[in-house]
Length: 291
Image (tube, rainbow, N blue to C red; front, side):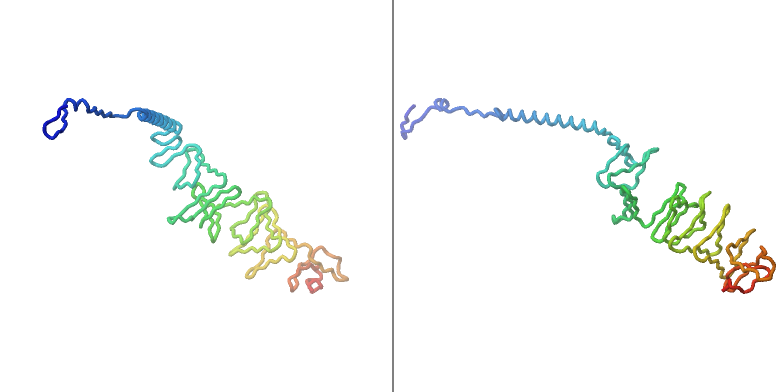
């Protein structure tokens, strides 16, 4: 160390300054506990990725994913094909449901099966419900056809039509009609009798042209508690048979002094329409029968 002549300042040599100044070192990187945490995080991420890949492969294997679909669900150009039992948790919308060839189509539900048809405004226009104890259809018309597209049954608000040639009622207690019945023929099954009765009211049979009652292989009988009336307004009543029997007609006894009673009688008609039998000897004279 030297002192200068001017100013009295102290000066140092350059070698002494370099000897006193410390060296500065900058470390680049992560060291210590931070480095160990990063390595641990990378290991955990690699483990999670490996487990996810394994689970993805397992799910694809179990569900049988392929380019055509998933398991029994096949996706094609013409639609979706399901093989086996399918369960829908909510509503199912489709335009057409068909079964696999030679396999039945079965709908099952724990409560009921409902099929709804909607219009463009999403309003229900037709409804078909199959319940546990009932089958209900709501629509403007209900039509049933056979395999040859022939009408079997038709029902709407105004009428009900049955299109079969033969309608059979197999109830053991008969069939009850609460309203009018229109038919071209009423016939009993082969070997059975036809019985038409009204227990608490009357029966009225009408025909526009002719009315025929025929018993092809048996008897035809009509009985009633009160009067049995046969009336022809503009025609005649014609009874055509080999034998016509009128039983329980009142008879007029032969007058005194006449011959012994005969088994031959005349059929007489009173003015009021009553019939009675009289001997040929007396003729159809007015008697107490016509009173």
